[in-house]
Image (cartoon, rainbow, N blue to C red; front, side, top):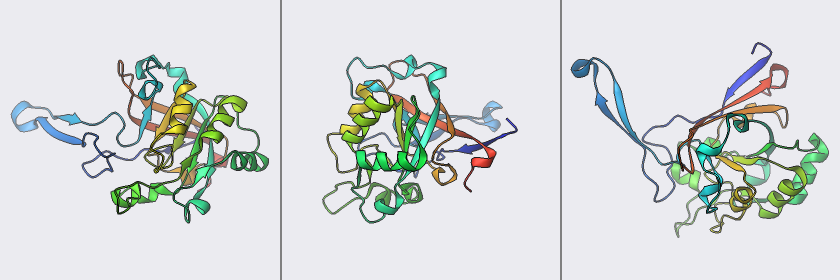
Length: 237
């Protein structure tokens, strides 16, 4: 591991994390104590898609693969990072286009087959302010930038990508109630990573992700420890 940098892309779990409306709140309660039992352990309640997490095809696709069906080899994948902070800063409903993917490839090279494509929106900086993180408006609508379906279809069909990632709470723009981008990648038997952080430390390409998703039987994903490995010379900060 000496030639590599290790970057943690995971938010800690605590009672204050932003929770998708209607999902279970994160709770950690004492189950045994040093004083009473001679050891310490806690009881944890958390939604599958809470905190930094991964999602699997059966989230939206009936009969799709569940979390326990992914092999360990599939959870070590190349990744590319598309930095859209500049446009997302003034358009919180921005949807990634095919043209934006083409422009990224002109500058950084072709997306490698089997990659997870990560969208760096800057929303990781809003994590400690749930209202800002969800971009809530006066009608309880949610707003954050995400992947457009056409761009995802283009990357599935033309690049053979393995998944999508983002630092927001959804790979779709927050105002897309049909979840078109998520449905597209799940329909292609891919995975989703959401609520990532530390993306400012990653280069556009050359990263390998190690996804510590739990193999929950029939699960649609789980909180995950997501680790990025990159050659030390490629770390950008």
